[in-house]
Amino acid sequence: MVLDKIQKENDIKKLTTEELDQLRREIRAFLIKSISKTGGHLASNLGVVELTMALHLSFDLPKDKIIWDVGHQSYTHKILTGRKEGFENLRQYGGMSGFPKTCESPCDCFNTGHSSTSISAGLGLAAARDITGEDYSVVSVIGDGSLTGGMAYEAMNNAALLKSNFIIVLNDNNMSISENVGGMSKYLGEFRTADAYRDLKNGIMNSLNKIPVYGERVVKRIRRTKSGIKQLFIPGMLFEEMGLIYLGPVDGNDIQAMCKTFAEAKRVDGAVIVHVLTKKGAGYSPAERHPARFHGAEPFDIATGLPSKPRTKANYTDIFSTVMKKMGERDPKVVAITAAMADGTGLKRFHNVYPERFFDVGIAEQHAVTFAAGLAKAGLKPVFAVYSSFLQRAYDQILHDVCIQNLPVVFAIDRAGLVGSDGETHQGIFDLSYLSTIPNMTVMAPKNKWELSDMIKYAIAFDAPIAVRYPRGEAYDGLRDYRAPVAYGRSEIIYLEKGVVLFALGNMVRIAEQVRNRLKEQGVSCTLINARFAMPFDRECIREMAEKHSIFVTMEENVRSGGFGEHVESFILEEELPMNVVNISIPDCYVEHGNVELLKQEVGIDADTVYRRVMDEIKKQENEEV
Ligand SMILES: Cc1ncc(C[n+]2csc(CCOP(=O)(O)OP(=O)(O)O)c2C)c(N)n1
Ligand SMILES: CC(=O)[C@@H](O)[C@H](O)COP(=O)(O)O
Ligand SMILES: [Mg+2]
Image 1: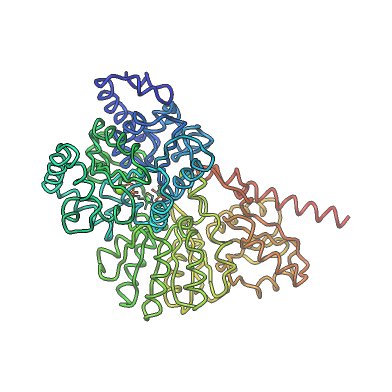
Image 2 (image 1 turned 180 degrees about the horizontal axis):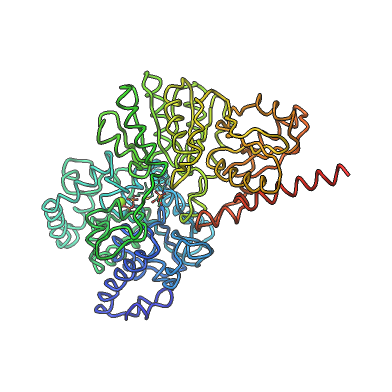
């Protein structure tokens, strides 16, 4: 196996041309086999095998710096830097991350996970290098999907100004997770179909270049001129007009051609963009045919490409998807927005039925929020479906554009809570904190699948900013009989006793039920309340509980700081209610990748830990009484 010759970075440089050809096949086979077992981002990785090899052949790691945008396509880079063994426990607890991690290897120079950050980070490294007088290349690899994110343009604008030597590799597979969208995607798409035009341009440039002295000057002048000739002959003119040098497009299958272009890019002064054409899923036909399904794949059968463990129960996203379709039918003012996550958020169905009321804005969460504000201002009912961690970057738009004007935008926040294998960049554990402090914002969380449906309907009918947060994965179908109508700021009492109150939010109600059963076995009487609203939480109910309870347990899947429990606790203190508060939440830290149940134990929000903490509090109070 040629792959066995790769033990560390730069080993690839010792291989012959024939061995390189063998290596690309072996890497593909290896990726397909290992991801079929562990799951992971297969399609994007299959597309960049040759591109990654060319980068590793052309640059000197770890001296040179490669920044992978999002980082979901960094698997070949991990293999080429001696981490092949890590794939056995890819994205599992304690195992190798699915994203670049500086703690894993000196060849990972910058952590990523969220999109469109690589050009800014790369430019920062390049500017620092220039100041400190060091000598290394900086390369940011960004996909065409990630190039729909605003930060990428802010960074290119700045790169043109700074004039630092800096290489941007545009990995263009004509796909985001699903179809890429928007003007830039259309612009890049034209390069793909313009083979004849490209050949013509290359032919003319080459012929001119061959004319001694004058030819080269003419080529330079053509590049500089703003005339129509330039428009005709120079692809990537948009980038060149911005002040970046454009090279390409280059065939992302052709290692030699890419190496040649990278060598040319290194000689360029200033920022240069190398446009590489790749194919998502390349080399594995199920992934080529269904790149979106194999973007983030669950374990699958290699022969058929079908999931190894087909899902039997609906998840929260499915429920949201069904309700949105219904609401679209009921109310023609309902419009849906996604930031490049139509599949992941379940809006695909809404799109199929109401294409004219569906907006995929690209990976542009900030724009999505302000765009929703505009739609709401004009009388529509926008629902922005978004993952909790990706909404983080739109904090100011939520505050400045939606909440100050008190506009009725619905935030359907999926992946709220621990998401598992994507790890710290993707855990949705901050939204309660960042939303609850914004005046005019209402925040809800459902205990089960029926309540999610009720809350989405309630939110769409609501006339102010409102968020419904729900977790990744299977929707809870217990507590079906508890379906009191949703009322503003009111909780739902599930069992009313005395002594201990479990005041649980969202999917923590399920855990609270388990805790209560165990407390009952020990003869401890226990009230269970489904909080429903994180903001405004049910103050009236808390006051009432103080009459017959001495222990008040808040339960949430969010960090402690600024979270639900902290707000409730400060209310109890302010009102001097005679109850001791036990705050069950995630400690203020970043939570790594791993199985969600395991992570819950690790951070102390599982049933065992909650039960133990309540029993400790009971004992403490008993001791105080003696
Ligand atoms: C801020 C943010 N929003 C959404 C995502 C989810 N996401 C991950 S990869 C991806 C598509 C990226 O497309 P592209 O950059 O072209 O890479 P490809 O998958 O095609 O290789 C999206 C939307 C993210 N990681 N970060
Ligand atoms: C890399 C990235 O940001 C997405 O692909 C993400 O991994 C999707 O997560 P889900 O699997 O929860 O949809
Ligand atoms: Mg792409």
